[in-house]
Length: 131
Image (cartoon, rainbow, N blue to C red; front, top):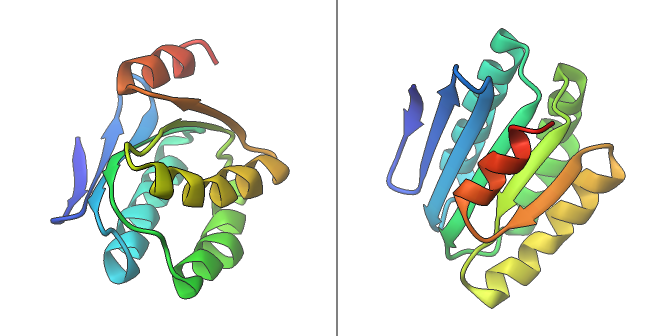
């Protein structure tokens, strides 16, 4: 079920798996980033889900300081409180973007999220199906 869609992001809730799926493409920053994450978080809370898959294969941007601070200091504490615990990250094809995303992986892992990085969504779904 698609919950949010823009030129740079699609947020879905998969009821059969009780998980959130965020697909990002291009430069998903600012208002679109906040909307896609907040709508996903609302669905996580409503459905008492704890699994999230981010398909970032086609993400092309490195998030700026303002977006990073919002994710770390606003969104993440709310997501943790809501029960988010498992994150499958489908890594960007861009090596530069992939390296930049490592800061989020490290931050989430330090805050209790079990993070696994995969090359394909199928691999991420397979892992999330086991946890």
